[in-house]
Length: 163
Length: 163
Image (cartoon, rainbow over all chains, first blue to last red; front, side):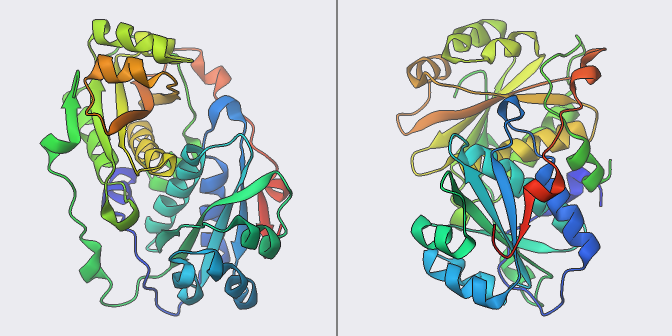
């Protein structure tokens, strides 16, 4: 899909059908995350692919909103090293989600609050926590109805020179 | 440009040539930022287009690293409402930077520390601060040399199941 088209049509969705995500698609999604830029190329993010149901169930209580991962064929936890920022995580996540969407795979970020749970469930090193999880899956029929999230009018969103 | 190609070839660059960014390109960059998803569609980000040299000079001391904006034909400040996160800013920035890159326009995030300066320079409402500035411009000749930033080996970056 054309880059601009993929970017502006991508919507966050948390309803998926049962189709598995192929190895080639997964590779491209991970590579998209891996190639995200970072300040001074510090690369504070790591990607943990979650497809095992038991591991996911251990993560869900770290929520809120993580339950959607149980119905996704695949989720990816973005681990963040101390000194990295949410901005870094956002760049990685958006790269992965747009790359996925450009081949028809929907996705939705899943916020994490309880890092004690994630550290234990994912066996993270002490200097890492989970910045965000992202669920991926082919969109369920009917999900499109909820996808057309309105955006702020242009003049509220965009300012010139000063606010 | 194909979406995946744009995502994985995009590098952060802060050396630009003198070419101006056309109105159509600017529109697409802003629309890419505007369409970024956010938790519960809260849309905590606003975009402030900075092309006036005087305004930019007022912003530079809010740095570090903001000096590159003075040699960019265009920068965009991403204002963030209280309650929004760096993750939201990262999603907006990455959308704008990949959309720009897909038409040959390079970019680089410019971190902001001193919000007193930005609030005054950009006349922000009290509940907004600047999450990040992004400089945009056509890449200067020779900049490509510095663009091939290495990434972590795949096995360090990607884990399966647990770390």
